[in-house]
Length: 135
Image 1 (cartoon, rainbow, N blue to C red):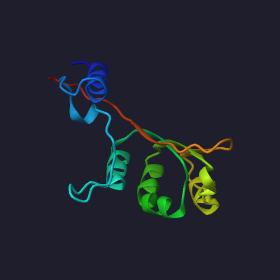
Image 2: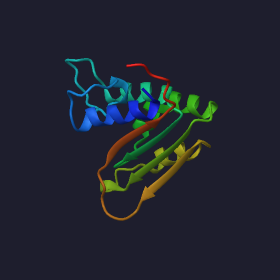
Image 3: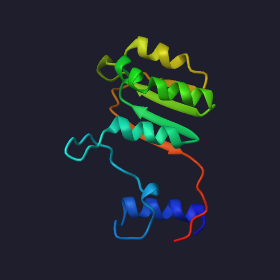
């Protein structure tokens, strides 16, 4: 199976027909914190960041504690010149200026703020190379 076909199969299985054949790593996933299953959104994000070639985040707000929890990973990504784009809103004015200043210090991150409306988005996209696959 060609790499593009593998990604398409994963998207189809993740969004349209969960019974279709695809590789788990290419299926979109809902990230949740579930203590009973040992799942944490933060762990999933760090794992994906450590494997990606580029990342895109769309979030409702940015806090200093959120940036600090990703700080070591973001430092490593900057060393590897992994580019990232982050879009945040001013949702309920929760975004903290100190957090924005920390992100602006990274040369590899393009940070944008939506200044109209109160968007409450949470989206994470990780781009990477797709290896040759045999199904």
